[in-house]
Length: 512
Image (cartoon, rainbow, N blue to C red):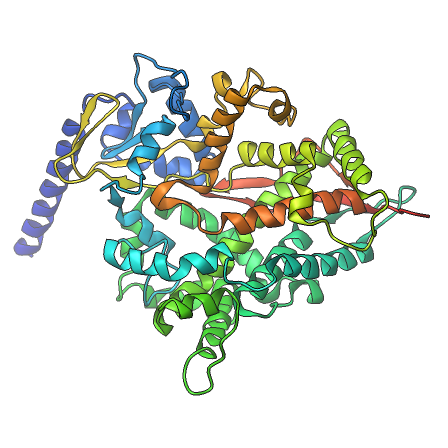
């Protein structure tokens, strides 16, 4: 018993020394007093679903949100600097250039153990959760061509195929102006992204649209999972405890059963992977086939399988729903998008789906998509990078090695000196009335929504393909009327997720 107390006292003493050392090493940086001693501040923020707003407020109070995204463009500086302490060993970066430097191709900053939180298979890691640099390089090289869609046959035709199935489903749910009824439009739009991504991932759709149902209760369970993900991302030690080989078996069968939700989808994806290996293996020109052709093993492909679905479905669904919400919640914007698409559609087949190249000629609609990415970035939580051995100098101050640095993306996308005095509101016109120099700065900052350098999103080309084709087609084919235009039915638990978008949809009649 005495020995146990000695061990506990030594542990507490070691913990206090560690906290004091971290607090002392970063004493020159401003931030909330409690953040110098505990992660509780950012843990509470993560659980609240408002971490993105809290980080923005911290950047404005203790630092200076500013950016110099284009070489030679004027910088916006402040005596406060652009580094704010938000935890004993965590600094918040509010300068885009600093974040680009940290994540540059030749940067020696590495992932922290926080990335392990995004592991979906207890047996191993995928390209996002892997922290070993050598293994990460192998996974990224093996998956890059697949995630980008470069080796997926007829990917744009697949968008058209699945989208037209969505149109049929929405027609069955359509009401009339005289007797409008409301549905949760977030559901069918999420069905579309899920069926599309499984089609290009594995060569077959999972069948959400056909079933008109949340297969495996995946979406329901995922919405419950995100708050836990956000807390673990803010407190990685909690995840490491729960992920321990002795602890995980105590809860996994109940929280992640193999016949429901994320667990069921993981098992389905693993079965699809197994068909590509062994004597009866199948070689297809889809995303999984690309991974295998570039040397990915069966084990790594199985560990990556669920990432393929979640990264390509949940994130794009949120972007798509956000775009439709912002456009249809403002009658003026709604009409301008519809008029622009209608003018382009004149004399063309009403059954065809606009191509991506054609969609990019729709200036106002493109502005709406850019503004959506700015106003509702999908990843709003903190992503940690480790200061390398020997430390580094950021914003003119020395930062000790092992310090974790994160970026305030949400706040940076609302800088009034970059986006205008009305940066807090959705206004697509800003993308059409600014100078080329201003637009270059704006585009460069919004591009950070998909990461930068070593954390650049490999699937952003596919995300743009879907947004640029589906948004104008939905607005053209259906009159969408939100039940409450003032209600933004999404919540930020590290990842932006829509829990409801109640709207009435009325099919537009063309050519009658």
